[in-house]
Amino acid sequence: MSIGGLNGMEGGAIVDFGAEFTAPPSQTRSSNSNNNPPAHALRPFGDVEAAIAAIEALDRDLRKFELAVADSLQDHIGLQMAQITDSALARGWEPISFVQKDGFRVYRYKAMR
Figure 1 (cartoon, rainbow, N blue to C red):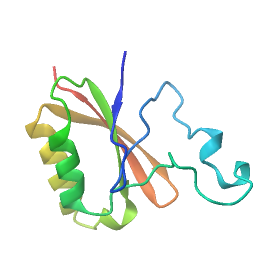
Figure 2: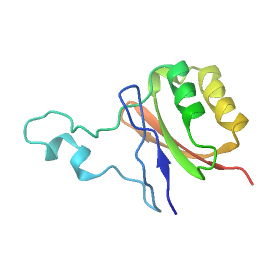
Figure 3: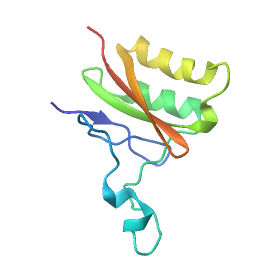
């Protein structure tokens, strides 16, 4: 099954995930000899409006996708993530899990039944 993702300058997510969610070795600094992040490195959204715009741009037929969100959007009330999740719910996707990374979370969404 094809998994969609959000990749780009303003934020994104890894396109594929399986039973074990891990970043590819090419995304770790230790495997990068010149200490520059690879061109395809995951860049989490740090802006609510940009994350919502990316969700709204997705094809409605997409069954699953992932969204990387910076820890700076994790406010103590949860308002910013509620806005992002509400956008996904309005388009027919529900959250199924998240994975905490260094400085961001990768949220997984799937099409509602």
